[in-house]
Image (tube, rainbow, N blue to C red):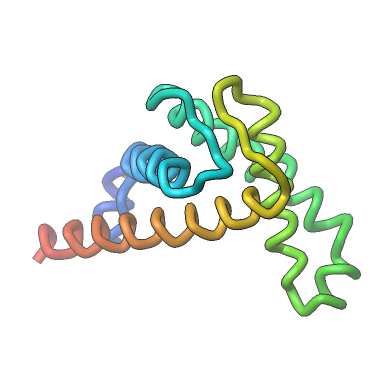
Length: 131
């Protein structure tokens, strides 16, 4: 059984669908925030890819090294880690500019909200398709 088949069986879109959702969410979030600049839609694809790589590699290390601070802040420091990951993506991807820490923080929160809403909508459609 492939990942896509398994994902559809539990009502969850596959990795390709989630990547498209994340890319659309990056594009929409950059459009909404004045402190975030995205030159073109293809840049959103690269940002989405960079965020995926950073979330798998760098973010776990940042979380590990900042456990005491995260515990002391009752988990709120995780928001700062998300902002740092967005700022790293801004450094990596040409054509993606985030003007400061606070815009990176807001970007990460709005991105999570938009992609969560879109993915929830897609999940509901996958579940309806199974019925």
